[in-house]
Structure formats: C-alpha cells, structure tokens
View (tube, rainbow, N blue to C red):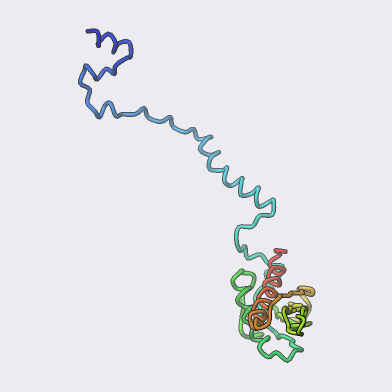
Length: 202
C-alpha cells in the first residue's frame, strides 16, 4: 500500500502495479503537423541563400555563359598564326581550344568553316624560353616559358569582328630539363585564361 501511495505521488511508474501492454507504453505523442506557411518557408530558404550567394559573385560550376551572342556560338577555327619555328604549337593549341571551350559549354564546334556562324583566329605574339637565372659556372638554373597571344572571333557571313580577347600574357617558370613540361603548362594556362574571358569569368 505504501508503494501504491508513492506511485500516486509520482515516485513509481503506474505499470509497476498495473499490467499495461508494452505497445501502449511505447506509443509516443504524435508530432504536431507543420503549418503550410512554415513548410513553405523551409522550402524557400535554400533558394534565398543561393540567390544571395549568386548576387555576391559566387559560382557553382560551369554555367555555359559566353561573351558571344547566341547566333555566333557555333564556331570553327579559322587558323593559328605561328611566327615561331615550333611546329608543335599549332596542333597543341587547336586541341586545347576545342577541349577547354567544349568542357565549359561556351561554344559548339564544327569542323568545316562553311558550317560555322563565326570563325576563331589565334595569333601568337611571342613564344620563347629565355634564361632568367644562371649559376656561377654559367649553368642555367631557372628559365621562364612565355606565351603571349590574342584571339579574334569574326562573323562567318561578313567577316566583321564579333569579339576580341585582347593580349593575353602567360608565363611559367621551370628548371633545366623541364622544357617539355613547361611547354605543356604555359599553353594550357594561356588557353584557360582565354576561355575565362570568353565565359565572362575574369
């Protein structure tokens, strides 16, 4: 009887004295349904955060934006002007151009100029690897690969200039024996900067 009195006072659970099925004891109070207004607010909040970040200049991957008007985004490469004696430069730059701009979704490439809406030309202004630092025994310690160029997009219909990149200067330091690696790096970085300008991302 004393324990029943204590149970009434809240010191013992009631099922200590009265058999209550476990299923009933395990039942929880149902959650209060969320109001439509609160549900809508929770759904809209992530969108508001994304819009805020977008307004602050944040980017969430390749957007496919281009400085070129829509009607000039089907391109063919008109040519690459290469005043150097490095014959590997032209095929290297052609591949980099097509791969990088395709990856970003900036343009659509065609193989034939007659099928293009615009033609892209690239002019190499300078490409060299001058020695910048030498050791006491005239041994080259460090050099720099320099790749300066510009690109122009013209209408395939009338030859008018649609867009020009302006001069792009790219360099890459390297040590003796790393010439091939420097050639690959400096050309890749240069074309990426060109793609940045075409994608309005600089």
